[in-house]
Image 1 (cartoon, rainbow, N blue to C red):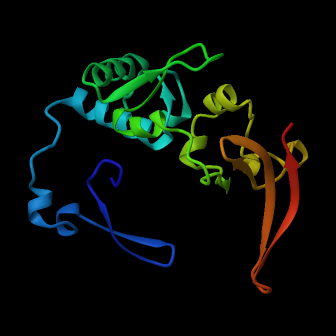
Image 2: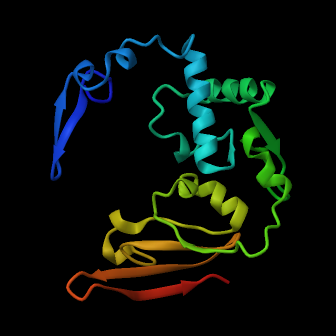
Image 3: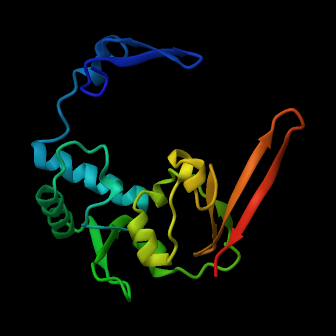
Amino acid sequence: LYFRGKLAVHHKEGAAKFYARPETCYPAELWNAPDPFPDEEAYYCWRVKRRIGAVGLLWDRPSDAWLGVDGLKSGRRSACFSTLEEAGEIVPVEVEGVKYPLYFLAQDAPFWEDPEQPGLVRTEFLAPLDCMMWDRGLVRELFGFDYKWEIYTPAAERRYGYYVLPVLHGERFVGRIEAVRDSAAGLRHVKRFWTEA
């Protein structure tokens, strides 16, 4: 009922969620507002555009980046890519060595036009479910970085560890880190660190 919009989360107490009818949780003007999408196609194009924006660069290929968008089959997804490109909302880009075109949001063009920003190189530990990691095939194509979140992999079959984070330095994946929290001491311990070639 929640996923169909018949119930909304009214409040939470700890980890428990309490539900109610949505019209009791939102202001009347919001609940009674007209549907912002004239048709189903417009709705799916909005979802595709949001996912491209979340990942930053995405292709029109089967991908975990499309999970949770019910009804988005390949034909509909491709139609949305065409519609968005024709409307000037997404921009195709070719990447050397990558067979398929990739797309970014047109509003992000300034970031692509001036990629050299000295002093902004950062090192990030990415969460396994970070939107940049949604399409692991694309990450492998672009960066040569093969990543699997092994939390659900039996211990004997794990290549790295239970909760290992990708390490991104600037524009390169430079390694993986497994860190654990020691709540009592208020510390985080690095159990292992693997560097990439």
